[in-house]
Image 1 (cartoon, protein in one colour):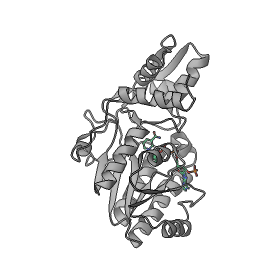
Image 2 (cartoon, protein in one colour):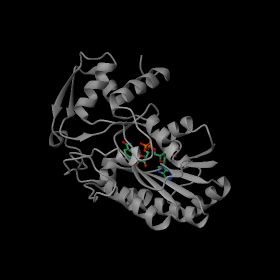
Image 3 (cartoon, protein in one colour):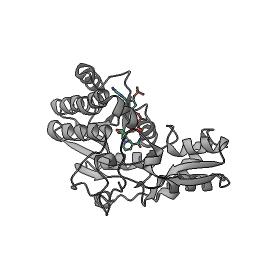
Length: 284
Ligand SMILES: NC(=O)c1ccc[n+]([C@@H]2O[C@H](COP(=O)([O-])OP(=O)(O)OC[C@H]3O[C@@H](n4cnc5c(N)ncnc54)[C@H](OP(=O)(O)O)[C@@H]3O)[C@@H](O)[C@H]2O)c1
């Protein structure tokens, strides 16, 4: 099978390339095709001739999306539609990576794929537009909703915590948002397995369990042997970020379990992530 990964230079895209060894992988970044340009997308896909396109390419700056909604919608909405239309034209299956920020966070139980979406911020709305484009224009598609990604190939939350802990004795971290941290290596394996099983529809993929950002930071520091740095809880309002974020965005694993796939807990995934950081020299 030939698989075109669009977004291969990103955090998840890098791990997808490492984990997907069973098939012929064709990696592409914005230098190969800017997804906002349908002509560039068509030329790339025609050259690659894949059976699957995995679309991880996105404008992922959540606060930046508030400042520049046109860019967020151009990439995440129109860009995704361009890929979906080309995939349909050429009879190629499309795997789209979506987000927990589709939800307003008012739920009191983990979200199922059929629950109504109501994004609180521009980034979430632009990814919702991307999902709709996939459903309306791609012929054969699978959408994976995931959350709170971390991986050694990106400058994600745990790495920022470790960097901050080098110079500060106390870190103030948000304690009123609950979600499921997800290791990009684990997510990559699940995407690969779902695509190889030819799964269709919407599937939630996160590491098991849930926590607040504050608890996640504490666990990262504990496992990295930096427990002397204090993690103090603050509210979302105190953090004063530009984009609103859901207070609760835990995704139910039932849709993933239905395909015989289970992900480890986020604490075990954190341990594996720290090993990756050590292996690439980002952590001593
Ligand atoms: N990060 C999270 O916490 C999180 C949570 C839930 C869902 N997601 C979703 O998961 C996916 C992967 O996220 P990530 O954090 O791995 O992303 P990332 O590291 O920010 O990488 C983004 C990728 O998108 C490409 N890209 C950006 N604009 C493009 C354009 N106009 N045309 C073509 N390619 C473009 C980038 O290519 P260049 O390097 O060439 O610019 C890069 O490969 C995204 O769809 C994101 O929405 C992320």
